[in-house]
Length: 272
Image 1 (tube, rainbow, N blue to C red):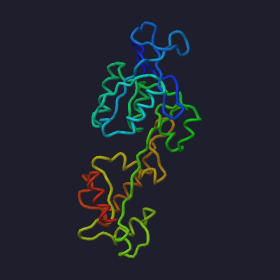
Image 2 (image 1 turned 60 degrees about the horizontal axis):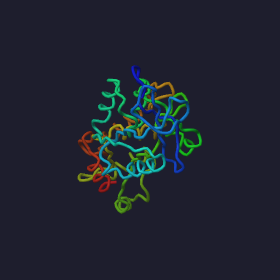
Image 3 (image 1 turned 60 degrees about the vertical axis):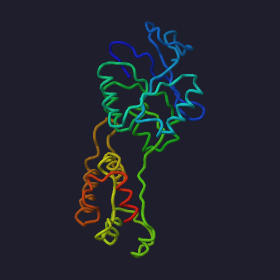
Image 4 (image 1 turned 180 degrees about the vertical axis):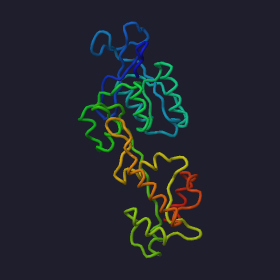
């Protein structure tokens, strides 16, 4: 995070541990006596004893992040103070903290689509992750976390949608396999739909961004270009036109906009 009035007590200066976990190090201003540790670089830089990490939700339900924190602490000797913030409040909390020029956040666990706002506001420092680390990930992912050739977020996990279907029901309807394309979804969906079944469904009410992005990338689009300009309009229209076809052909259930994650799974399991 960049602070215009006083330097943050700790900032990220370098990269990757032997196991592939991101290693975070701190740098202090000479006027900051609250941090101690081994010198890293010039006389004004030192390793932090502790960093403050804002996590989306409780670690009780996030064992992967909890394990990564433990590995980080073992490899660096730096302790991690975890601030557990509900997902619905996380972006607001971070934005409020940074707008007030507070330096109490060293790292956070959040989605890639916040990155453009945070970077353009000057609130984030690039991570020292080189090609040897980022080459482990597909270009579609690295493009989401890099601006001007610098990496601002370290990929730790991905979120993909799962298409659930009932193989027995498909076979009963004469289909050997589930649809592979949008056209096949429309063709099969009309036959699969009935009074008590939907031919296709997806989560929207609590995962609208995730869902839209999945379909957007299927259409060959992306959210932003390298200049942080929105580029999703053309392919985004294709997505919405596909959604409109699903509605007009009565393939998706009524009340689709309010369909939650658990409800969508039930619909897809019973119907697809």
